[in-house]
Amino acid sequence: MTAQENSQIVQNIYAAFGQGNIPAILNALASDVEWVHTAAPLVPFSGTYRGTQQVGEFFKKLVEHQDILGFEPRE
Image (cartoon, rainbow, N blue to C red; front, side):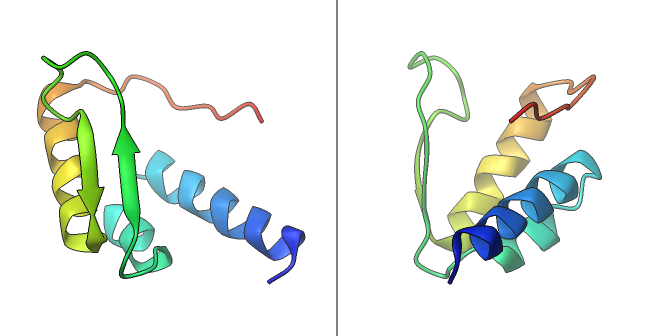
């Protein structure tokens, strides 16, 4: 895959997040994805998630504990 193709995949994932389309994000990920979110230990969605099912759990926890008021990737 070229750098441009990889960049487009990432852009699509960010766009899907901005639209709240978590299934589109999960469909774009490899089945053996490892998703790492490092934050303070008390942050309920901090941790390592393996596989798309666990990454889906990450997003579920994120939405349950955060009010996302804006989303604007800059780079």
